[in-house]
Amino acid sequence: KVFEAIDVNKDGQVDTNEAYELVLQMYVQINRQAPIDPPPRPLVMALFRAADTDKSGHLSKDEFCSLATVLCARAALRIVAHKFITILGGPIIAIWIVETMIDNNPLLEFFSNVIPEQFHGALLNKHIARLVLTVFFCASLGNVVLKSIDFFLGYHKKYHDDPTVRVV
Image (cartoon, rainbow, N blue to C red; front, side, top):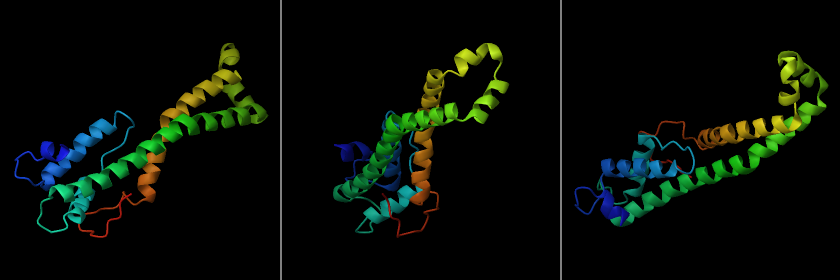
């Protein structure tokens, strides 16, 4: 069904433009779950060439399924990593920092000097600090983890003519 929908010119094959349009549409849906950038066009083109086993410059339905599987695996890894960090990592790190901050007198003294005295009760409160830091880490750590995954898997490189592209 997806193949028929993306085969705009109804020739029974998917060309590079149709494939890239699918990727962009797919990532619009994915971004409803996690803020994940679509792969760069050169990477999609390299994946397209790898899936094009008969080297026709177009993908048959079976070749298209191979490309879609790789793209979905790539997206799933990022969604799971983002959700894991957002749900579990952010709160754990926030609690650890708050506990360390409360036990660290020089750090507490620094904040006491920076924050006006009338706000000490509210802003230097352990529970408020934990809440603020949890929100901060949940909001920011997911994106940091996604960028780290991309960096360590090599997605920061150019893929114009690299037939050995390994995609996870």
